[in-house]
Image (cartoon, rainbow, N blue to C red):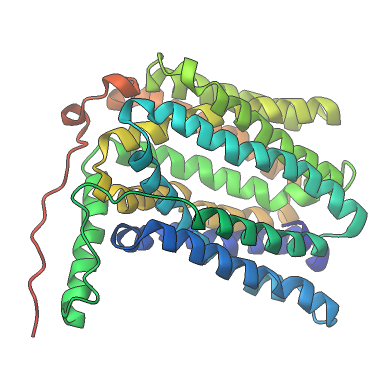
Amino acid sequence: MWLAFELGGSSFYTGLAGFLTMLPQAFQFLAGPLVDRRQLRRILVGTQVAQGILVLAIPLAAMMGLLSVWVVLVVMPIVSLLNQFVYPAQQAALPRVVEKEELIEANSAFSFAYQGVDFVFTALGGIVVAVVGAVALYLIDSVTFAIAALVFVGVQIPPAENQEHDRDGDGKNVSFVIDEYRAQLADGIRYVRGSVLVWVLVGSLVVNATIGTALAVLPAYANTYGGPDTYGFILAAVTGGMLVGSLSATPLKRFSLATLSIGGFAFSGLSWLAAVGIGWLPATVALFFLSGVPVGATNVIFAAMIQSVVPENLMGRVSSVLASGSVGAMPLGSLLGGIGGDAFGNTMVMTSAGFGFMFIAACWLTHPLLRSLADVEDLRSERYGLTRPKRAEPSESF
């Protein structure tokens, strides 16, 4: 986002970069059936290698004098597209390697590993951009992809119970394979559509749209306070808050999901609005940090809830449908945020994100089923529609 702002010179290009990079996330549900049919380790290793090669295109273009904002706008969406296989694969792997009663603790550790590193390197990234420039980070990033690939090579992931095996090579014709893929894709969509999860997604769509608008104008917003180091510190503050929230998920699991969502997102919204309105950088960073805490806690607890009720052999497609639905509005929000930042000012767009958090709290407060949603350990699938979908097996065509 910063490199697009630097090369393009306006919030429009950061908004366009966010739109193109986030757009593949809206289609992550298409990757779910493939994840459930393939070996997870092969998916994780292959995606890391491919992404590492692609990000090298940025420093190579800079060395050859060919780097422009359009190179960034082409390369990074392809990297993002490959990355859409990673999240469903990781979500599908986690319940296979830990016991059901350990899912909250496992997700907390998973979030700590992810967000802890993200917190450190987001802040460090802003400093490195200020010292050596944004292009150097792409070279570093290619190395981290290589390290991740080597780590995944050593991961042992047992197969899921009742896993539907890959049939591409068992003599079936192309028509059968396509029908099987469509049937598996429909499983994931039907599972979500017939449960309380669909109402969770409605609120998430709105809050993620407003977050997309904020990300689009954040480089320009941070530039008014200082530059790339300020941009890094603000991003690190939000990520650091999410890190603390993920660590607090285990003691918070005794509260109902409704209580955590209503109180947490209301707190996040108020903290975000105060951060934008206070106008003093140290307090702004601190308040952005506080706004991220409830987000980190609820992310961990919701992930554990989904993993505890969804059958293992459906996990890839269900988690990908949920991910696609929850972030589906972010690309549009980013595009509109970039346009709105140039038209109405970056501060006004940043303010809208705070109201997005308040909106999701209001959704949970006013919807009777969401308002009564139980805690993870007491969740009953029958009450909330979280049951295994039934489908007819595809017939072979000739």
